Image (cartoon, rainbow, N blue to C red; front, top):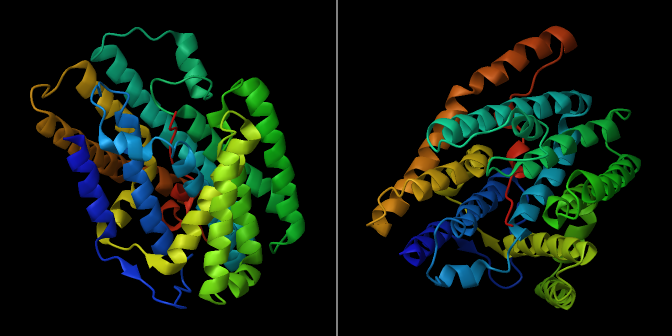
Length: 371
């Protein structure tokens, strides 16, 4: 039955699909509408990848299809985020740069609210005792209650790293990108050795965020090659795929895994030059991607632990997906007061135009722990 739902979402993804013919290209392949659709696809793939942790006993076909994706889906979000942040800085300059810490703070508050929802569920629904120490570790992202706290931690600190790297410059320049590359390198070293010791999945997508900056900075030059002709285009894709599978065999090494994540992100970008995914369903998934990412495992955990609709797999899966989308939408709707609060304070302190959270690319950072 899960295969049925998986292919249903595959069909949903290709609805209204557009493909360019010979020597035809979508020159707007990195526009927000197009990247939103790709992130929408990544959102539902995240749900399916995590579904395998909750009572899946059959060897479903979709598991074999997605088993090698791992953190690759996350890398797509981080790549688009790095690209989107630099594009926003190009357009809005210092105004956008100053808003980055506020956006990180908003995500932090929303993450803590979701953590509280997990806590209440575990205590009152599952009768699981949570110590004060455990809860405190969750607050600082050192532990979790089945939510992927490592990812929230990564998203939030990347906002602050971006602020530190660009704050001294009114316009983006290559030196600021070098700075964030250096900071992210230190982040990977520190987190991998101390904060999340030897947990590769906590750091192997960080450099995709950095590559997004480089792609934005050099996009004009990349386009001259990629959009020149099909010979150049397919030549670059073939080379990327060859390198990907050559490096993929070393899948237990942080460096090699990080490289494959980067190559995977670039391959998806290359595909969107010829293929355009665009429909309202994918845009909806992307618009609630952060809350879906953090809340979907709570819904699955409740259904699995309480054996809800255990006698009907079709009804159970339908209930899970409906609940995930509904709860995530409601959470986003009823947490708008956080944005309004920061809007008021931000205007009072900075005396510059505040950029609402829903207008920025924060959920392009979003996505999932596939481990």
